[in-house]
Image 1 (cartoon, rainbow, N blue to C red):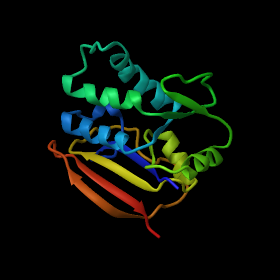
Image 2 (cartoon, helix red, strand yellow):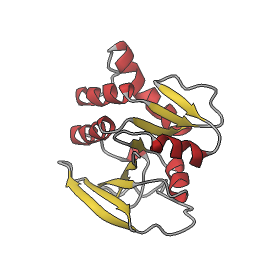
Image 3 (cartoon, rainbow, N blue to C red):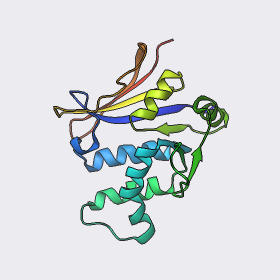
Length: 186
């Protein structure tokens, strides 16, 4: 059975708005490494559309947009090549190396987890909340950035019960961000 890992960037005050998080080469290498260690990426519609808009073009055209730093290109190529499963009831299709997941979320994700492999990676805000409610996340990774954003969105807002976790790993990035990995407390 392959594990489902959740990874998200977050500020010290709990904001997970990607526009509030400073990006650098270490951060992009870290997340590219997460993708390389996963068999597939699990996304909700909003995250899928945001990531596709940002990263798909460079891998297909080879042309780097003005906003993209050269050190972002390896991440763009890695996420482009990664298999994706998109949870959405509103999309008609997903064609960026992706497949739509329909029907019961718990059953669909359990089926994906039952396959052999290195694991699945999930990001975003709403989908991980639903997966946490179902007890399907095997590892939580919070990349905590030394910044106060002063706004949201916040992680796991509306969680119906406490989830007790235990620290299983810690890494510091050059920017001062700290990668904290937690597993469910048994």
